[in-house]
Every structure is written in structure tokens, then in C-alpha cells.
Picture (cartoon, rainbow, N blue to C red):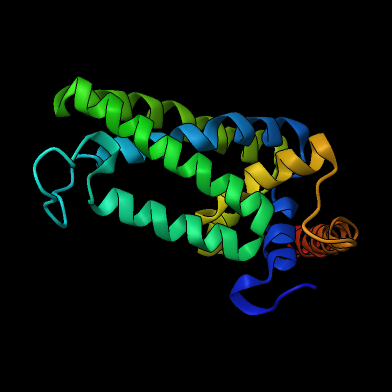
Length: 197
């Protein structure tokens, strides 16, 4: 049932979870990753339209711009990883994009930029503290850009897994847990070797 390569959800999710095993760090990511996506969507609202629809069809989040295209690509990729959780992620991504566009069009660029700056200035340091102080491990983004890019989806998948016991297919959670334990064990060995040298 598992896939390989770019769509190997087990491998990618295990990599992400190995960098997010401390409960405080997990909690910080649960509440702070999606606001970062929301504020990026706020900024992307101001990108020029890629296509001008007939008058009256361009309304808030329905304008075909870079933000909407990126949301669509991300949502399709999430669905390719796992139809159920990916569809939920896709829905949340479109709601986030639409809500950000409504807010951005109401605030205007100057106020939107200030909101984005405030949220980003709060969330990023808090997430870094989660990694440095609680996880005691650098963010996975330093070792794998793809996993960092997919964090919103992984945060949702982790929430579904821990709250409802969700798994994309039978045996997924067990396999991911084994991969996480192996990754953390390997990381600790390397960390200890660095201390000794």
C-alpha cells in the first residue's frame, strides 16, 4: 500500500515526526504552522492576476493569482499522498486562502503587511524555541526542504493520528513509529560521537 519516492508518505512523515517528538514542540507546531500559511496567503493575495475573468467573477479568493495556483498545486499533492487526510488538507488550504484573501482585501496592503510581519515575528521564534529548548534538535528544514515545505500537511496528519487514531492504510502508524525510533536512535549516536571527538 505504501508508495516510494516523492509520494512515500511513510518515509516523509517519519522524518518529520523524528524532529517533532517532544510534546511542547508538537503543540507549538500544531498551533503556529497554519497561521504562517495564512499570512503567506495574505501576502499572495496582492500578486497580480494571471488571468482576468469577465467583470464580476473576480471576488476575493476566487481571483486566479499566484496564491490560488500554489494552493491548488499543494492541495493536489496532499491528495496524492493520501486521499482522505489530503482531501481535508486541501479543503483547509482553500479555506485558508479564501479567508486570507477576504481579510487582505478588507485591510489593504499596508495593514496586511503589518499583520503578516507581526504573526511571522511571533511564530518563527516560538517554533525555533520549540526545537532548540524542548526538542533539542535543529528543525528538519535544515536537513530536508521538502519535509519543511510539507509541514502544514504533516501537522494535520499528526493531529488526526493522535486524536482519532487515523492511518492512511493499515500498518502505517506502526511502520512510521519504527522509522521514527530508528531515526532518533541514529541521531543520538551521531550526537554522542560528536561530543566525544
